[in-house]
Image (cartoon, rainbow, N blue to C red; front, side, top):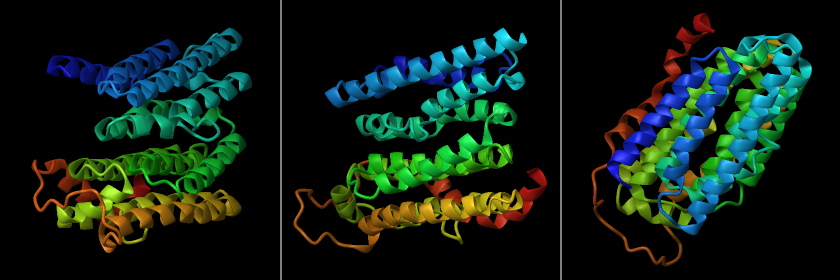
Length: 346
């Protein structure tokens, strides 16, 4: 792709996100979401592969439908209350439509079907954008409207997301699809707490984005698109693969690592809200995710391939690893000790 065109699309992505997260008016927030969608489409379809074109088409249709519902929801609310302010979403019908729209934007169950397909059709860097940056504007809209949304509906969708994100990721062999189902599962953790402590949702999102970025950039360095390639990538970069294993365990939420922090705080908050059954269910469902993270970690470092593969074993990597990988991986592993600083903030 032409560097100038790539620059224009990147600036448009930043502009769309900034407009949405800093707006008070529904029409402005909708405009930002539209700019975002239009800026990411050329990046998804730039390889001109039929699967990439299909992914871009699916993404466009879903995001267009979700944006239409956002506009419809805000117009219905303005019709009933005379308010276009995002925080003044008081009409129950509008809040229901908005929940549906944002669930479609984010890929929450039952509107999750598009996400694994789109991620599978995209390259790893674009997959990283779709999993992190493109979810930030809808998460901020959820944050701003959280007092008006129906908690029961959100908790139900959250538990379903954690369940389906775990179950559907179990038999996948493509790393991008595994990370897509991992994203759906993490969104469940964010949605379950949004009505009770929205700041925890944002904290969870930031840490999830950090760990996912580390995994995507590591996989991009080793060009591992499926498990069989991942099995032979230890010959190229043994140290990077060892770090990938730890980052995956952090994403699964194992205690000494960063990923345990948001899960711990969310379970604590749910218990304070007398929602111990929901906390127990979502904790048990995260074990499904742990299984496929362990599978990825096992393929990356612990095992040697039992069969002869078609991949030639390379003893050097052609280009240097992105320096951001080191920073993101370190943060993905070592932020748990700062947890005492967090309770005063939230």
